Length: 297
Image (tube, rainbow, N blue to C red; front, side, top):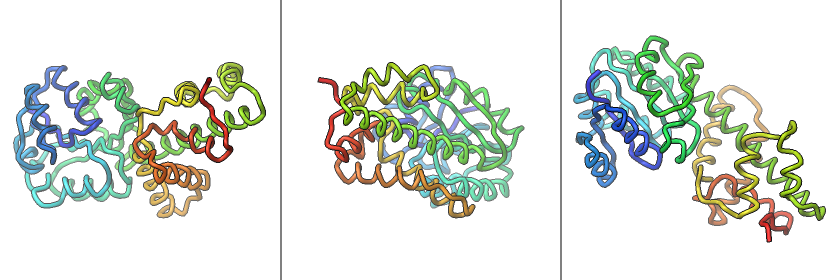
């Protein structure tokens, strides 16, 4: 397999790359922030001089973990991008959360070089990235996915091929729709309980094993009761994902009215200084809207 290329060593990419090193893989890494690359080199990785240099030095697999569609496009086909260093037979695994439209576009460009691109966004946030227990949803060529699967399994607890190019990114958008709306529903329900004079914690205990129970209820309601909004998954990142939802839905002429409402709530929170808080801070939106506090005394 040779060295794995890894580009993007931020809050998610750094622990993911470290897990690959711990699993015994050799890495060649690149990040625009030199300090991030320094940290990985301290763990035994080789430094690449640019995305093109990483592609030239890497073996079969190159991973990217970047903020959004423009960053992935720039790293792939921009100046000194992967396209200028890739070799026929390599597989680019983009684990960023971006537009499926962009994923399909970049896959087509790389295919002209004999390179497959797997879109493999993740769910689970920083904590699961550190634990190596992310949920990974992939789209792309099935044979290329099987070659990449052993590497992905070192970073994720579940690794699922859901379809062709762009299908992984579409699945991530579905995930973010459901998570955002679910957290909003938890906050809305708990605000109603508090306004009615009923203890939200007791409401939580009463409904958590029924049909209203969910991972979002389990994870986010206690955060609201404790005003514990350290990320987690940041509001500003969820806003980015919901913008991709809206872009994709418009391209497909698909109506997503609840997503449109949730992004407005999150933008209001960001404008109120909460952009780096966990998305469970939707509880704060409802507190302000209803002049209540969900925090336990």
